[in-house]
Length: 115
Length: 114
Image 1 (cartoon, rainbow over the protein chains, first blue to last red):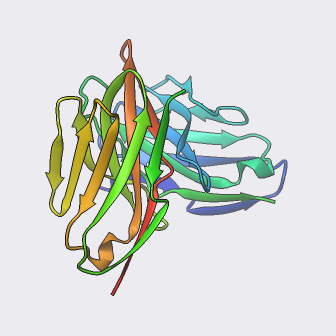
Image 2 (cartoon, chains in turn purple, blue):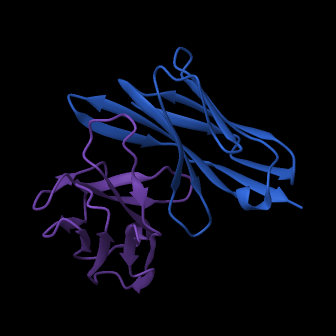
């Protein structure tokens, strides 16, 4: 049981380049999330998904796109990277909401630098 | 605007000592409060989740308290170990019409020195 995994772990991009971050979970969770973590700020939600084939915008969605073609995978895309997107990106997953004890499980993170 | 504020920003204590981290929040409508531990270079890991009716919850050497009236929570760490060195993040959940929104604090960076 690997939990939540993310690839790649590190990446350096030039401004304008594109890339896709992959998140995979093996816990059969319905919900999946993408966050970014910046120095001096709390984690901020970029996009989330409540099930296969669904996506929704979070707090800071601009410049990102997502897809959830399979229940276990959640992809985060940057079409034209900007230096402001330099951050650590975390994927998380959880069972469907309903219980106040519903826990989000986080992946190890992807450190992205945009030059 | 929902906010979660944590104090102190950073803390250094000797191994074996106790410490208390604070969390104040203005989140509505309140659903639950969570404490996460984040080791350097890793993702956050849940320590406790507390609902409105829970005042105290323990997980090994970690004890969280919640005062929903004053909108304050604390995380007490007993007999600290070197492995407790990490960032501790307070997260408050608001649920509105079935939609849950988490507000994350910026964390307290705890360093345990031998």
